[in-house]
Length: 172
Image (tube, rainbow, N blue to C red; front, side):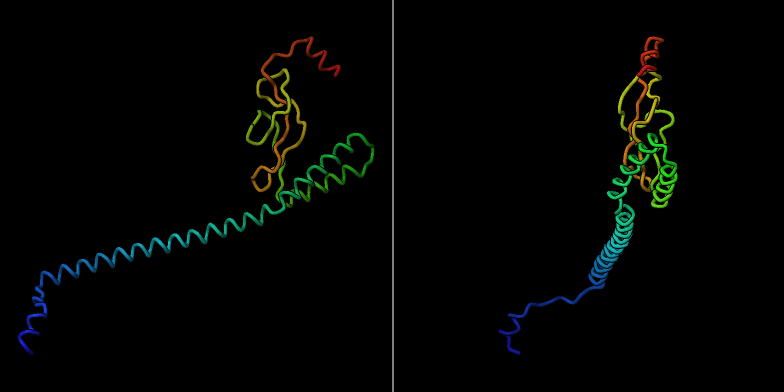
């Protein structure tokens, strides 16, 4: 080797034990950081899979919601017809209809008691106990715990029913 060549090469001092330990600590910290990032990424992926399965099940469960809403309108018409006709087969048909709806996860909204705006629409207010349901204009239904159709109810306004109002309401 020539001296000119030796001068152009950079001189690397031999590594000391403190420099080697520092490099090892740096590499170990990088490895632990990458391992923790990998663990978080795997956990996020597992959560994503669970959410996808839950959403897929929800789509399947509520896929028939539009059809069921149309069937509920049909049920309302049948019920109205059964009130005005003396056909004995209509109540039997309604009972069968209700059984099928129940098997599909449809449950009627409870309308006894006080007004609940989460599952009911106030159709009208009349004299009576405040926020007390006086009558039901249209039944409401839930599908697997989710509101399918709100109940339309007549709600008391909190005004006392006077004898004159009772007589006029009775004549209507």
